[in-house]
Image (tube, rainbow, N blue to C red; front, side, top):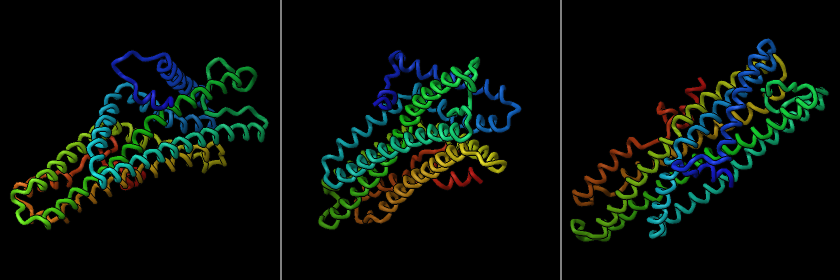
Length: 352
């Protein structure tokens, strides 16, 4: 898939022709956007359309920048996930939890892939329907290409083809980032559940053992727990570094686009506004919901530490669990620009 080729690009190698094409199209679209704002400064409807799409343009630019400058984080994330999968494969219960996470990853990929493509189809359909209904030439996106009149032939066709190319490239960029983000969040949740099985194993060993002070199985179980916990911290740190600033851009830019759209809808019935506002609101709600899911799993992991029979373990093991508990009380969370954890509470706070 093009998305994975883009996502897993080796940043030590020169940018390919396809990469330069993507950068050129996105930057050209930015120039067209600023040109169109100046041109339609006195046209309320066209200017509103441009302000709405500007939020999406900012998101695409930010994600493209991250993809081309921070791919090393993606490689580290995938490398750590592969190490986790290899370790947990030796334990049936943990392997089952990680298998569920990978299945959810695959499902998330299909849902995101389908929903974004349906959104593009909806944009194309709405522009065609508007053209038929008003008997005018309507473009997919608000900005126009300079020196080509979008109201006449062949200027309209040139603008339309450019918009199609832009939509495809923006789709690749957004899909690449979101698949990586959402998929690995679900894997992180599964890893939390896999680590909880260590506490169940510790409880079983303390109940069956007459002498816990020199029990090698307890030592091995504890070493495995510490190893998985450290691996999870590395995994989440890389994911947070990769997505933190982009999350802030997505949240703030989407809210600006929604505000512009609502302002226009108050003035008159605006079909393109509905095409933009529904996917944006849905994306933000899913965005916050996924962050909330990880927070819930982090709390489940913390509760498992509290509920295990730590008092029956030898002092050395109790100290290790106390250290893990201390770190779990302040887990590495995916944030919105380092400001707040990415969850529905942050989403509501920004909206209000």
